[in-house]
Amino acid sequence: DAKTTQPPSMDCAEGRAANLPCNHSTISGNEYVYWYRQIHSQGPQYIIHGLKNNETNEMASLIITEDRKSSTLILPHATLRDTAVYYCIVRGYYGNNRLAFGKGNQVVVIP
Amino acid sequence: DTAVSQTPKYLVTQMGNDKSIKCEQNLGHDTMYWYKQDSKKFLKIMFSYNNKELIINETVPNRFSPKSPDKAHLNLHINSLELGDSAVYFCASSLQSTGNYGYTFGSGTRLTVV
Image 1: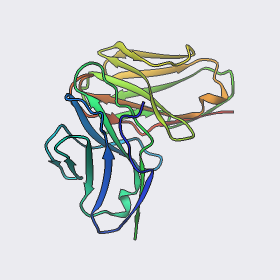
Image 2: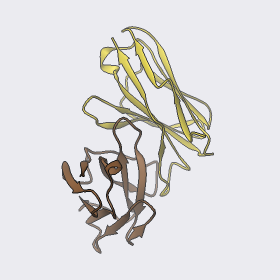
Image 3: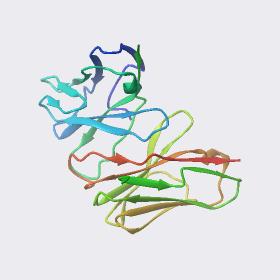
């Protein structure tokens, strides 16, 4: 059962910021928002995760709305190597909660 | 040093054969996982082990049997291979099974059953 909704695909211009949306309207209080990506033929790669505060690391920034029902992953300067399927995943803190992948968002960075 | 390594990378075999895929992680993580990615690119969890103990067992045919000799290794043995088993199998690990820890994935094993 998908807990998140993402657009199936989007294009981004190389060198520009890429804003990837995700809806998770049924998120509960102890659930984190995770972002992973899968570049063609490779294993999924962890990008970032957060609970309610905005987060930033060397790869991306994560903006979570105040009601936590949606979030945006921001790739500050998209490169061709950022072309991948991006997965937004909601995962609980407690229990053996697995990382459940949905269909993801196929992001293509265009030169 | 590869954090999560799987062998073999490619495996082509005939229907009815038995095969194994090996996975090792050098991250000191307690929990390991097997995922299957089918031709439609859906990634689904199959099994999870925490400190050699099975904690997640999704609806997977009995022909699939994971084995964890120690917490750094999680192997997947598949009996009587079928055409539908063709997929890419990914191994992953995380520090613990609970909490907000990310997963580290291996590069995958592409299994083709002919």
